[in-house]
Length: 499
Image 1 (cartoon, rainbow, N blue to C red):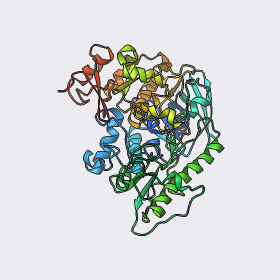
Image 2 (cartoon, rainbow, N blue to C red; image 1 turned 60 degrees about the vertical axis):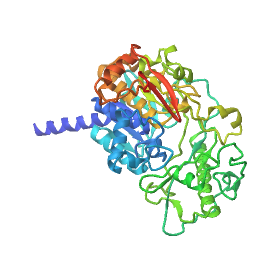
Image 3 (spheres, rainbow, N blue to C red; image 1 turned 180 degrees about the vertical axis):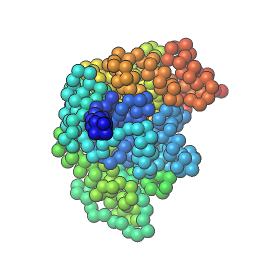
C-alpha cells in the first residue's frame, strides 16, 4: 500500500511540475504582476525568467524611479510601493530624487517582488527562456532552454520586447514609426577613494559635453544645442538619487540614451547592441569622472551580480505591439467618452505622452512627442488580448496601444496594472475552461475591484475608502463621468473637481 501511495505522490509531483494553468514567460514588471495575481486567484502558475530577478524595467533594467500614478496607488502596484515605503521608513523617504516621488534600490525592489511571488505560491524558473511554443487543443506545449517540456492552459507574454507574441505569430499593429531610444541604466555610488575607469570604446566627448551646465558645455543662453535647459551638475546627479545614497543614471540629455531600431534584431545583433549601449553609458561615467572631476563616483559593486555590475539588460521603452481586441490611442485618452473603451477599463495612468527620441537623427520631426499633455486615463482589457492567437495574453509593453500612446502606457505603474489584469483574466479563463476572449470584461473588473485596483482614474475616493467600489463601477457603466485636467506635470481626473 505504501509503495502505491509513494508512486501516486511521485506522479502527482511530475504532473504539477509539467502542467500549469498559467505560464508567464518573462518575469518583468507586467509579468510579475500577472503571475502574482493569477496565483492569488487559484491558478497553478509558473514564471519563466532569464535573469535571477523579477521586476523587469523596475529592477533588472535599473529604472527604479517610478513614473506617475503616485495618487493612483492601487492593486499590486500599491502593495509594491507600500512595501518599499515600509522598508525605507515611509513614503516621504522615497522622495530622495526629484524625478519621482518613489525611488528605491533595484535590489530591494527585486526582493519585494520575490517575496510577493513566494507568498502567492508562484513557481519561478530563473535563468531559463522559452525555445518553442506550440498551440494544442485547450492550451500550449512549451519547450524551455533547460530541455524541459511544459503544458499550459494560458500563456502570458511578459517579455520586454514582445518576443513570445512574435514567436507564435500574433498579428502586430501596423503603425510602427521610429523606435524610442533605449537606455543602459547604471546604479552608481560615491566611494571613499578614486574609482577611475579606462576610456571605453567609441568614446566621444561630444556625446556628453552638454549634459549639464559645466565649463565644457555648448551653452546657448542656458540651453544646449537641442534647445533643452542646461541643468546644474547637482540637479543632474540628484535627479535619480536613491533613498540609500546610490544614484540612478538614467539622464535623457546628452548622456546614456541610445538609438537603434532593435525590434527586428536577432539575438546576436541585440547582444552587439547591448555592448554599444553599455559603452555609451560607460562613456558618460568616464566623462563625469575625467572631465567633471567626480573621481570617486563609480558603478556600485553591491547591487547587480553581473561581471560589469551593470543591469541585466537595457531599459527598453518600446516593444513589438500586438494587434489586440482593443487598441488604446491618444484620442481615446483625450476624449474618453467619445469611445467605449472606458467601459472595459482595467488599469489607469496619469503620465503625459513621453517619447525619447533625442538620439534619433529625425528628432526634430518627433519633438511634439516630448511630454504631450493628456488627462489621466483608463486602459481597456482588450489591449492584453491578441486578436489572432487564442489562449495568449500580453502583460508588458507589447500590449495593443498606438505607437504614440505607448509613450504614456509604457510606464511602470500602468504596465503593472495591465499585468495584474492579464493575470486575473488568465486565472478566470483557465479555471472555467473558457478562452480569455470569451470572458466578459465585467468578470475581470469585479475581481480587480476585489483586490483594490483602480478601473477609472477618479481621485475622489481611494481604494480603502467607503464608496470606492461603487464609484468605480458607476464610472465604467457611464453613470458618472470624470473631468480631466493638467496640473503642472500631473494629469488628474475627478468626478467632482475640488475648488
